[in-house]
Image (cartoon, rainbow, N blue to C red; front, side):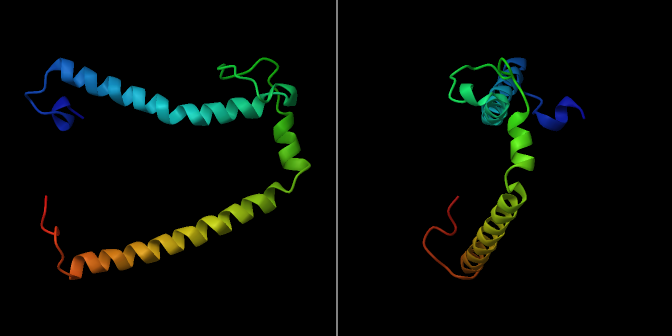
Length: 114
């Protein structure tokens, strides 16, 4: 891909760098919660409520994963989550499609705005 595929010819280098910096910053904001959960799952149980910002904590281990896989009904919990997710998705699609139909067929104030 060429530069012209993403930006206008009149865009300055400063604008392009600023856009990329904002995108990188937003990516870190989106990834941080996932890293925080991963970090919490690797901590020993006596350090679970630690406020350390290390991604890989001291004394990291996989005991929590072993307990989740072999000592708890993890598969049942996953199935329950999938059931709730699919029911929510179905209801959301049902209401969204009927609302979309109404927006496409009926006239109302503000329909032609923008």
